[in-house]
Structure formats: C-alpha cells, structure tokens
Length: 315
Image (cartoon, rainbow, N blue to C red):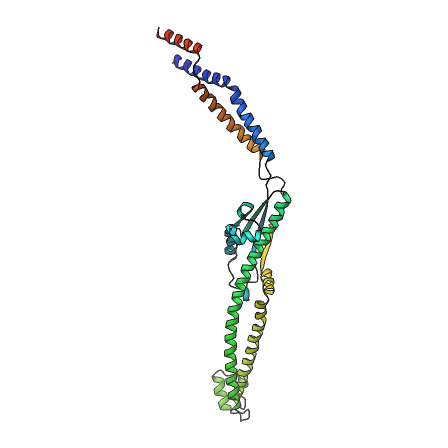
C-alpha cells in the first residue's frame, strides 16, 4: 500500500517536472496565440446588426377585402423568399441571407427582421429597407387577392345585371298590354290578401297592373344598384394605386421595435475570441509538452540512475 502511494507521488512529480521543463511552451503558446487572435480581431472589419419587430394585423375584412390570403401564410412566404432572386433584386444584394434575416413567430404573430452593416448607420438603413420591402410585399400580395375578388364580383354583378335587365324588359312588355283602369272588387281583393298579396295591390282597381308596376320599380332599383356597383369596382382595377391605398388601410403594420443604430458590433468579438484562444493554446501546449517529452531521447544520466534504482530494487 505504501509503495503504491509512493508510485502515485512519483507520477505526479514526473508530471510536474515535465511541465516545469516545458514551461516556455506551456505558458508561451497560449499567451502568444491569445495576443495573435486579439490583434487579428482588432484588424478585422466590424459587423453591426439592427433588429426590427413588426406586428401584422388585418381590419375591415369585408367586401372586396374578404377571403384574402392569410396573413401568417404571406409572412412565412416572405421569410421563404430569402434565397430567391426576387428578394435579392428588391433588397439590392446578391445573397440576402448573408445580410438580411427574417423569421415569423406564428404564435405571437410577429415578424422579426434583421440587417447587417459595416457601420451602425448602414445597419439601421438596411433594417429600414427590409421593413419597407416586407410591407410592400405583403400589400402587393393582398392587392392581388383583392383584385381577384373584384374580378369575380364584377363577373357575378354583370350576370345579375343582365338577368335584371331581361326581367325588366319582359315586365315592361307585359305592362303595355294591361290597363291601369278597372273596377275594384272586394271579393278579389280578399282572395289576393289571403295569398299574402300586399293591400295596395289587392285593393287597387287593376291588381295585375299594380303588381307588375311594383315589380318594375324594384327591378329598376336593382339595375341601378348593380350598375352603381360596377361603376364603383371597375376603377379599382383600372387604377391599381387606389386598390393599394384600400389594402394599405386594411393591413395594419405596427413596428414594435424600430430600426436603431447598434451600440456594439456582433463580430468580431476580440475578448471572447482571445479567451477561447488562450484556453485552446493551454490545452495544446500541455499536450505538446508531454508529446515532446515522450518522443525526446533519454539522457545518459537519467538512464544510469534508472538502472541503479532497478538493481537496488531487485536486491
């Protein structure tokens, strides 16, 4: 038990002696590597990052703005465009992911945007640009959906207008063959009222003429309303700026965290890199010291001393 303890003490002493003999390597390597990395970190160009948080919502989803594409789907679509030429052209860079970042939080409904730059001002300007590009993209896609709704609504309104005009022509032709003059009959009036005919029609001197006249009035009103709808919707397709303005009023883009100039760069980080280089240099230095010690040829004095200890131990 005592010899085993002495062996352990000798092993620890041997380790200490190896580190002591190679102290220049063990201490010098991490210090030199840390100084080198710190100097390189000071020379490398700095990169700043500006982050923006945008909240998206839709209001007044009625009429032409109903059944529009979902806002989360459009926001995720913008995120997926990071590696496309479309977004590269709008942002003015060849590789958008290296400069810009976009992430949509579906649970919170927030669009997180970021932009990098060589200076704090450049990072802020690029952040403002990606916010504008994202807003324009969402409004453009919303405008496309609204335009599709308008075209469908115009087509249906046109069909309804043609049907109403045909019915109006038929009623007007029938009115020409009827006379408004006649004689009121109480029995006929009672029978008509029993069939839920209005009193003004049932008690008139010519119920058929009166009923057709009322239908003509209603159809005239319907034709006027349908024509007014067509006259209102058509300019929205002819003038896209009006449709964009309408969509812009419905799409609410609230910048919760506006673009700002960052105080410190995100890279390089000399102090962090220096600390990592020092730790790695120390580990490499210790490993190198033991490897060099193991590969070094044994000295003659050490061999004789070792042989003497072996002979003494055998006795």
